[in-house]
Length: 344
Image (tube, rainbow, N blue to C red; front, side, top):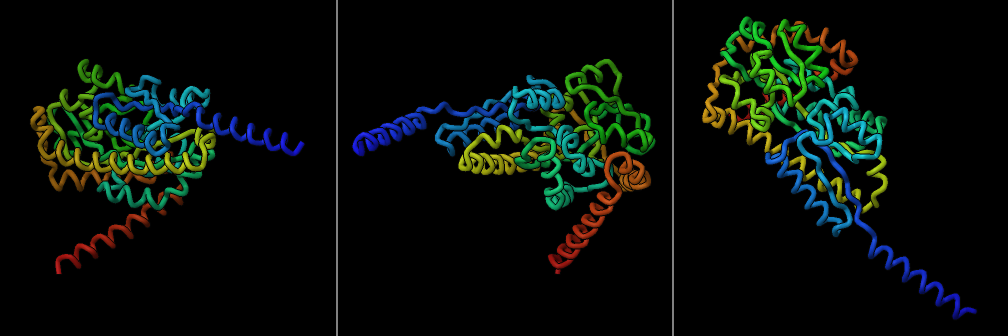
């Protein structure tokens, strides 16, 4: 009997090992509105390859690019129906699932990409908790870049700005609430309707980050770009808690490492393309960079500050806005001190 029991144990172990050895790999289904053929798409492929390598081919990734899985709200619904496992959001879904992230989108609040990143880093535990309550794991946020004004005619003053009808993404709740308070007419539509709206002269330009203007070819339509950085866009990469928990501990670790590496690549891509596009590549497309005078810049930020509390009251708790303003004051004081030390 002892020999028989030993044989049965050996057989059970062999069957278990064979089962593990021949287990089907897990395929994570990811959706994004980022178009194929772009640098964004190239990095998503690199993320998929890296994750497969780190897990010995046991965790694969299938990306649905260019909004083929629907807009971001439709993709979230597909996650709930177990038709997708995760989403690389262009920002709007991030602020739906983590309402505190709306504070990062308030017009005129941040003046540099680094300011936005600094505040986002300190608020990340709040964001992560809100994503978790919504059924998602936050793999990380990415700074996409500054929102600029791409227009048919030059925008050189607040008066010019208030006369222009500007396209915004219809899912962007923060922009829909913000710009009318500033007296700027905006026309919310789907992303795939933006170009047609411009051609049909329903809009006079686009409020968009440089990389999106390039990816969706709005920069090839517009004639002018004003380098007035009116706000900053942050995106996020989300995985459903269901899909994340189904992975082994080692696979989760590999996913987090791979996502972190990809986020750094996306962040660097955004910084590099901002400099290249605004610094000269847009000009090669025929775009004229409109000089933004100090008077225009000061007027814009003054008016944005004047309506900030009205804007924020519709979007985030007052205490959160005050915390962000305090963090910004600390960051700017440290930055000024550093610049002063570096000149000595």
